[in-house]
Amino acid sequence: MVKIGRPINGISLNGLEYVLAEKGYEMIFADKSAALEFLRGQGYAEDDIENEDVVFSEIPQEAEDKFYLDRESGAVRWLYYNPDSDAGGQYVENVFDYDLIREAADAENFFDQIGGCSKQYLIDVGTDDFAGYDEMFKTVPGDFNGCTGATQTALVAAANAALTEGRTLITKENIEIDRELFIEDNHINAYIAAWFDVDARFGTQTHDTDDYINVYANYFPEIEELEVGYTLINADGSDSDFVAVELADSEREAILAKLREAGLDECVAEMQSDADESEGMTMT
Image 1 (cartoon, rainbow, N blue to C red):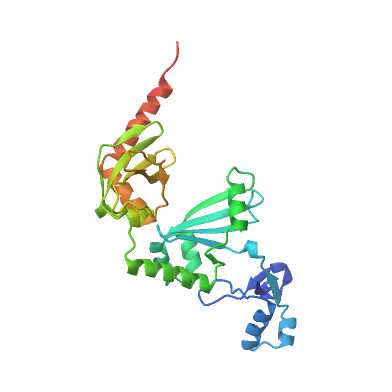
Image 2 (cartoon, rainbow, N blue to C red):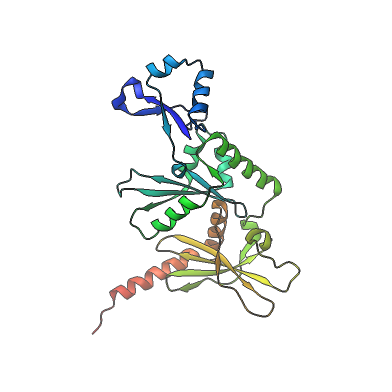
């Protein structure tokens, strides 16, 4: 795969600028022949290409941005490698949902809008998580690759299809905090009464069985993180390990709103007060 570039303002020391599509993303071509055909279609002759110092930059397959789509939750992971970080290299992961895709669909630059509004994680070379991200990026094909017009079209289509199908999402209207909140070590735990189709949301299979799902939320004040998941209670009384789920941004906000109504802020203040008292104790 290649992209078409030339020196900025015709000066090689300035670096390269690349051919952009209408939405502002770099145009990617299957090979040099396809790129040349495009230029000819724009009126470029062979002499023009040579005189303007046009270059055809190869894009290694593993260097393309990759988009991993979770169709159940509507969460998208956009992963790419940044070789120019201060750490000497890092993976950048943007996590966003269908709502943001629909909001960005008509933006001047779709991918800039997505990148600017996503929840972003930076995984530097040498950190504990880097090896796992590196292996996934190099071995697991993306559902869509590259910040191209084709990728934008596919993401918007997936978001619109989910809206049309009425995909199950967690909202303030279909959950309740069923019991009081509990402070447990470094987090606050809550049981969520789920008035939505848990099988459609979590991919479980409890319909027409005596199995059922318990849904829980764990809030970690120190890092301001919300974890939501479930345990499957089998008909014989056994249960599964806790299974954490990926949340869409709208779901996270809905659950946090319900937790605050149930006294989350008071629990956080109590945890902070207990921590302050512990720090003030002395041993004799």
